[in-house]
Amino acid sequence: CVARVEKALKKVPGVVSAEVNLATEKAQVTVRGDAGSADALVAAVEKAGYAAHVEDPSAADMPSTETPATHTWWPVAVAALLSAPLVLPMFGMLTGADWMLPGWIQLALATPVQFWLGARFYKAGWAALRAGSGNMDLLVALGTSAGYGLSVYLLFRHAGHGQPHLYFEASAVVITLVLLGKWLEGRAKRQTTAAIRALQALRPETARVTRDGREQEIPIARVRVGDLVVVRPGERIPVDGTVRDGASEVDESLITGESLPVAKHAGDTVTGGSVNAEGLLTVQTRAVGAESTLARIVRMVESAQAHKAPIQRLVDQVSAVFVPVVIGIGLLTLLAWGLATGNWEQAILNAVAVLVIACPCALGL
Image (cartoon, rainbow, N blue to C red; front, side, top):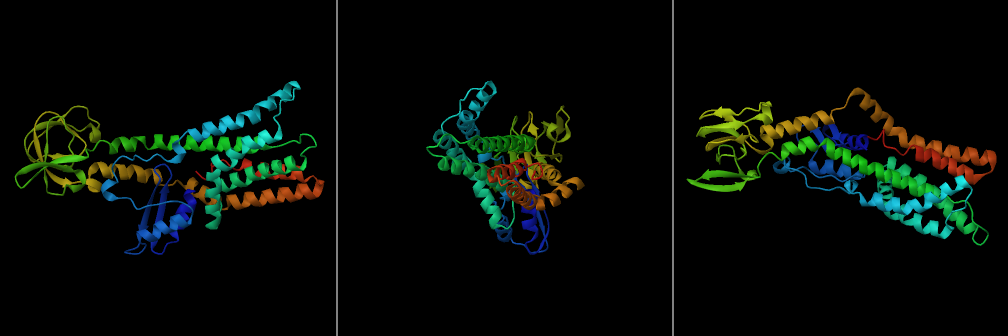
């Protein structure tokens, strides 16, 4: 996924480099001069099958309140509840008991898992095909659809002539497990960015500014360099700047790690996000928003996360051809088993196994 987005961005005229951070879901793009407009970059990402938007600099360092679909647990729970009746009867086979559900009930349980809870795989796989590439979602969609389709065919073919061996549980369980993996991935990404969000949350959303001899509280985005900001005892300093009036003890552990407060007087510099312990301070703004020390720290952490080790670049090269190769091997398996044995049912199952075993996104990540 990362490699495909980076490849799409690098194809835009004027782009020098592009690095995508899966954890923070951000891309850092370097362009040559005025080339490579933001609209062209967004269009390239959307053509590759993903959504994108230009980050608002004034809100870049504010905590994210989005809740992506991959972070919700209910699809996993519903898929597990629907898949359990398909799987549990198989344990009866160990004791010789026949607990298998009627085929029509299996169809009723597997269908919502396949086409409702698994719809995301079809959408992502189709978007990848339209972009002229493949992804792990395409493998999931192909593999589970083959197993589901074979089961439907066998069910109708043997209607009224006994219970055929069906494979609805295979497609349902694969989708359930991949949904579980996506949820765990989303949780891991939230934990990865927890430190960044904690840093972002340290900056106040408003500042008390003195303008025209009058003190007023305004959103931090409206504070400008040179503005005089009043910071009362116990408040966080909202901007980077220089103390113009007052004296206090300031907790700068955010930056230095030093737990003891530091004395600040007129002429001393203060950093946004630090805590004014006791005195009233008037601070002349030197940097705010994306140019503040706190915002630069966040950007450096994100840049470090996005930077790829040499082994990661090798994996990206393998990922570019991984899905087409897997699909090719699956087709070869289907034809080889079908032509050699004449048992096309077994041939389809073996081809499905090839596709499904390649579903985990280890290379994609």
